[in-house]
Length: 134
Image (cartoon, rainbow, N blue to C red; front, side, top):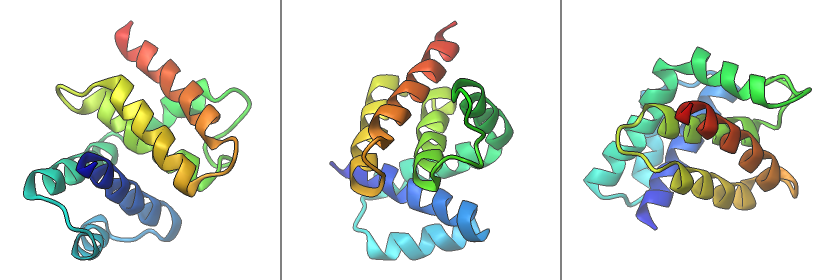
């Protein structure tokens, strides 16, 4: 469960960066104060944030490519940012398990997203995972 909290914290940071151009380190530090994460989970969470920030153009391009008829700017900000965090994990974190990252994004979307968020996120992330495997 703590890994889910770590992913959720990373999502909230990326969401703030996306919505109000927040400083990622400041947002992370603030959210970390409100969440009780072990040091290893905190490090994992920050690695997700950092992986996305370092690879934003690649990640956003892949999401756009596989989201037929949806530009990244037209997507729900919750969906967009959950996919960004999961894509960073799938594509750039060594030893990541794509199925776990996808499942976690879907579960978090049930808390923050809309009724169709889970299916949309699943479809796009599945395609990104297949892209990675090819």
